[in-house]
Image (cartoon, rainbow, N blue to C red; front, side, top):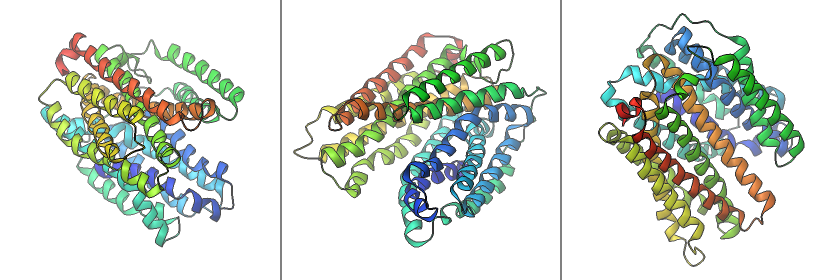
Length: 436
């Protein structure tokens, strides 16, 4: 599962680095080549909940394995692409496979380890994601420096093959005899697809974006009405009825919005506000993912022994402290404090995310682990998209010299909110009592 997760995260990060090379090789424009990233993200968010439903119907391991096969197949198609439309379609196929990995990976962990070790296992997952995210740009640059861009996708074949072979050892629990609702899956895809595309177009074409978002709201309303009477709905309304699960989802969205906004704001702040080179920007930001990696493994162990509400509140508070200090600290004299502040943000994020994910999964019944995984991935991607859109709007309506610091300040408020929301879990339902 960790190999497959690394595969998905590395591919996304390496593709970002290769966009200029792809643009030249395919004779296209910067605005069009960005579709390579957008197609992948759109497919991910559209397919997370349907993949969770497929896992519950046909078995989590089987759908997870199919997802790895689809991802690797998409990688081959990306590597042999001769035009931008072909490459964009192949990236969309990759996103569909990646959605199955992201939705069902942690759900499979729940059945692979003892309940007392789930926090540690989720910590290993967070460690893998953090290290893969940190290594992806450098690895992508090394490949592009010595090979043509298709090799970025061909390196997925051995990793995918290893993940597929190792997946045979995962527990092969049977699925449930539930009926797949294809119209609901179509409404789900329309809702999230229109929402992501609308968010991307909001700064450039606000009227079209609002129209798409209105259509997304209509689809979501129809989807909720269709799913509400069901015992096992595609959109996990049954799980969201649990106070503990609901608060974990909202806190996760808030935390990912904060971190996404900060990670967009910081490069602009450092390069244009503080006149740093791209290399120095990378060095000043590197303590963040590295401290996430170190903290994730520790917080996973702590989450098996301590209150997850307390750990999440502490993590959200540290993340808020780091972001607020970055926004307010007079860095023009010396940038050395930024290294410590970046590490504080990483520690806070690591302390928050692992216990929050553990609580989210334990607040759901074992048979709904796939739905919980789909919702966890949806919360993460929704938060990341919201943070990016927030910074785009700030750059549109405020001076470019002040927008990054405003974004960091808003991120601090959202991070603090995620910690405070986590504290509310300890006063909630029986599920909260069991997990906290």
